[in-house]
Image (tube, rainbow, N blue to C red; front, side, top):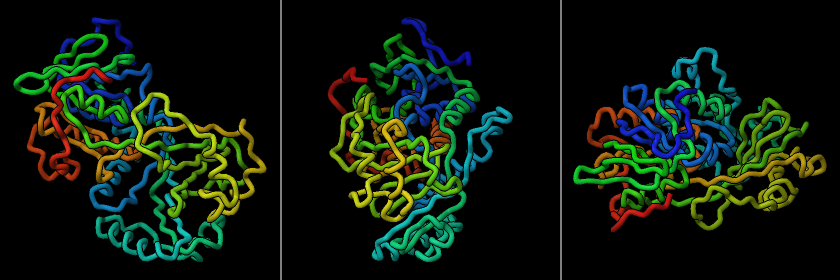
Length: 406
């Protein structure tokens, strides 16, 4: 791919219509749609490969089951892009490993039943009318591996997972953008009219539009433009079980709503995950893992035991060894309302955001990138945008001076 390069110092493009900071799935999808609308687009990624930080440790899932119409609409549009992805990117026969085996939420708490009922009503009112609300008995009939403690479930067959590697590189190959690897944004240049350029460790790219899509590092990049974003980072673990015959290959993504532990089939084994409810973190390129996590989720009777509602997992510890496990961790990026920020910065003309997906970046990136590109092209007021930065009045504070911190 000619547009994917590691430039030497002084070899960066002199100008661009838009510069995107961040080469994860959100930044790459944004670049695809910007370039397809005719904008000369440059992505600067400080790591040596695309999608090697948060994107690389995702569970690669997508769903439309959210709790508000705004996110439901965003994700449904992304799922439509997934379904027609080869045509969208113009690469016939591209296989992104789309598996629509569904999303299943389960609970053993009777007090959650009413909440499930109201949530399905909200989803139906938002046009998502294919979510099944199931009693415990109905859920066990349909999903034989569920245990007797399940009292209710909700399921949507159209949700599922995919190969994020193929998705990301499909967007990159199908775009007309240039991707500069090992190229860090170290400064954002401002003048009386707003954004004037992006300074990198390899040189300066002059531009009037810059987009921050830097995942956990988005707050630091925003400070280069003297903007303080209201972001919080939390650690999430992903445990890959390389081989486990107990896992039904046709099972959906299954979430224990009471503990937040989830799993799905993957190859001959499974992915298991959970967000740690620990103290907010600083961004890091090397998120530490806690090797207590496997025992916390796989030990029968443990606090987060994955087998409390799905009994076959209680037999898994006898089959597993450390050589059969791969543990990784990433950082979720949260805004105060757990919805992303997509659109312009009110304080700095020409500065845009596409960030804060709270762990939903894989599933939200296609439609989020498309909407961002349209805003950049139209340069229209940020109205009727449920993900506008203006929904956080007073959240942003202009800093006194730029800091080269990225």
